[in-house]
Image (tube, rainbow, N blue to C red; front, side, top):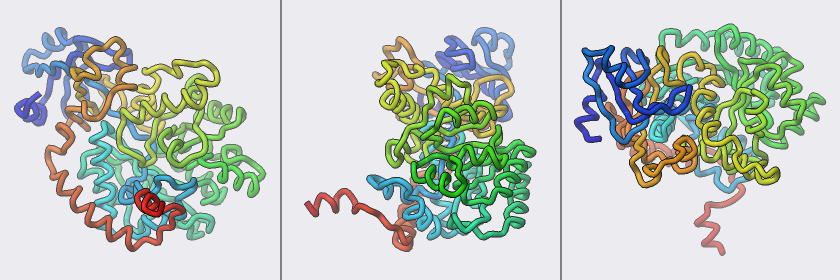
Length: 465
């Protein structure tokens, strides 16, 4: 598709889009089309039928393309983008040594640039929604909202809520924490792209009362509470020493489990903990790349799928590439569980596309708004080029998208019915200028931050012999 097509897609009127196929909740449908107006899908169905029932619209043929739901990143840290590579090769539980110092060194300009840079990377990778798990930067969280809004991405925006001294952010002021939480949940009522959430870094960062109260506040508001749970063995052992219970058992005891909880990572699960997740409707963000890069276990996602446990896929800020995330989700299950049991499928391709889209939207509290190509849903979608050497000879497109798809094949990204990216770059703001400014700011931030790394950089290690 050429730039003339980009101009047509970027218009403000109603669009009748006719790709080769549409990935609907019922599967991949050939010769289907969609009508997009006022930020949502007004109609989805056979192309011939929609063209006949909408004679006032000029169909826009999209040959060689499939229309897919936008991917949902169920776990991100937007203000950590300046230090992504600082985690490479480091042992687990780096948040105290790397992330807290890095985010603490951010001011308003650098926090905005870091968050917008992360949003741009996510859009380039096919994510139309990101879920931010809260920042430790000493700025108003609205700075992150502005960055996401200006980038054009949908954002579930976490506000850190702590009231103990266990976490670096804890100020011990439970009343103020809960008042701020309630204000945050009502702050973006008129927003189209920003969806408030509460965030507690780890269970021990909040008292039992605050864990319980934030759960209730979120449930009443139709929002989610994000908590890192069972990310590392050390976290499980800390909970056993402090409470005599594993993290999910403790959260259940204080009344924090339920459909409003989004448990980040959820590795190292016992059979009882899986039952708790299933019985309470608690959601999980399965973060397979984070497990490979900085974890010590892989969440049993295929078992979760079999048990009906709600889960989405998250990057944890590792890399904003949705196709590679879906591939990592299947790949990690195959190596961690499938090889040992002779399971050569590990959920097949459709499972990971499902949980990267609709399942992720449900997990982060947006299942009624996005994640599906269906009438009435937000028009958050991708146009993916399937005429490339990787996908043109297709026999099973869902599998091939998971194992062979890549972000270079994403021609266009739409969020809330608006064209946000065309061939990898924003259509209404200067992406390269942001990247240049972010690179300038990042040098100062990393220099100021009191970051402690176990290992030197790879080049320094090589030079040292």
